[in-house]
Image (tube, rainbow, N blue to C red; front, side):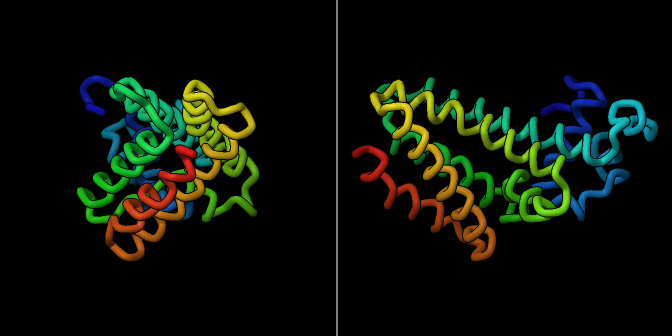
Amino acid sequence: MSASTHGPRERIVYEAAQHLRRTGVAGTGLREVVSAAAAPRGSLQHYFPGGKDQLVGEALEWAGTWAAERVDEHLARMRRPSASRLFDAITDDWATDLASRDFERGCPVAAAVVDCADTNDAVRQAASAALQTWQRPITEALVAMGRGPRRAQALSTLMLCALEGAIVLARAQRDTAPLRLVARELAPVLDA
């Protein structure tokens, strides 16, 4: 995302997602987000009258949409799509991102859930919607690969659960091995 091609509102949402990746909801300061977005100080009240909950919700929506678009991009590049190849591409994305950023940024959706799913229903709902947005193209791809709808839903849930857990382990261990391991170990299950 380039600051020159997006307006202040979009930059604020993007920066909020990046802050969530690093510090979760509690650690995401609104002033820091606005500053990182190079946006005018009054932007928060103007664009986000619902305050931090609205901004976090929109950042999570952005994250879900971005992840769904990445799934579509991976599928478009595959000559012969398979569930394991798709999962491998997704885990490879995360391994590359984590390693290139010295493991400082995880999934903003997971961070929001861990931070306040039990205390902030608006954020919990936004996180749930973001995960559904991300899961939808995975499920649809699995159906297109010949899985029945219920099996495709179960496999896409398995993929996201394994991925999120592997991201947490990779950050804790500062090593991408957990991502590679889940991709390798789930491949036979995903392609069965």
